[in-house]
Amino acid sequence: MSTNESDTEMMSQGVMSTGDDTRIFPDVAACIDCGGCVVACNRTWDMPRDEQRISISTMLEGEEGADGLNADPSQAMAQGESPGETSVPMQCYHCDNAPCVSVCPVDALVTKENGFVDVREDVCIGCQYCLSACPFGAPQFPDSDDGAAKLFGTGGTMDKCTMCEERQDVGKGPACAEECATDAILVGSSEQIADELDKRESGSFFNDQAMTVVFGDDAGAFGV
Image 1 (cartoon, rainbow, N blue to C red):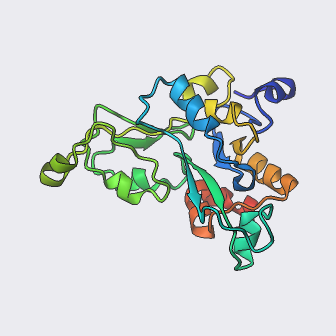
Image 2: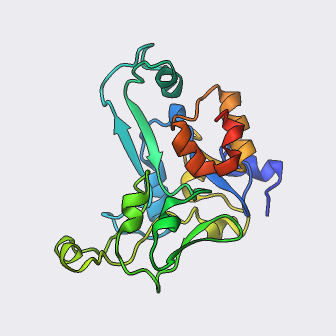
């Protein structure tokens, strides 16, 4: 299902389409670490305060980039220079080549026909292999007992960002993207996201290997 242009503008400039084969990806240059995405997610899904399906990871905090604080961190890194303080919205990107799906020994993680990576909670055994495999730290184990996990290999049932699939089914964008003040979370097809980053003159930030994990064959749209 796709939204029309006027509806998309009402939702968020970062939400370009919704539904089957939708992707979600950050424009790191636009993120200001306001935490609005975290609040939107927690409120929408009634998450406990100490649990987060999306978080902001800040690297090189307080440091100025090679070309000043307003430099695009992706461009700076591409040139081998320091990007300075950089904030990255981290969540499940519903990867095309999802390593969590590949390593799950009981097939609790599956890629659905519509492209969303889903957790089958009744199958998950809490082994945490997915947590070790995911390069973005998406898998969460809110009911884990660290001691029990070490002794018995159980970390409770895995939880992660669902990309608000239920909202997308009715033509709405993910809550985090809709409420991002700077449109730093992009939602749409791979081509739409690549075109929007190009239009903004923003880089993809992640390296080629990570981009291939996230977008698979579509990574070529980002110059990978």
